Length: 68
Image: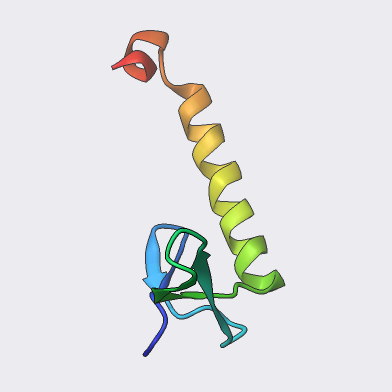
C-alpha cells in the first residue's frame, strides 16, 4: 500500500525520504491500515519556512481579522 502523501507548505506530495511507518493500535493488537510518510530534513525545512511565512502574514492582520 502506498503511503498517504505528506502535507508540506499546503501541498500534498510524497515525502523526500521515501520510507513509511504504520501506527499501532494497541486495542486491536495490530498496525493500522494507513501507511504514513517519513519526512526528512528537507521536508521539515520546507514546512518550517512555510510556517514562518504564514506567521509573518498573520501578524500583519488586524486583530478583528485574526479573530474571525
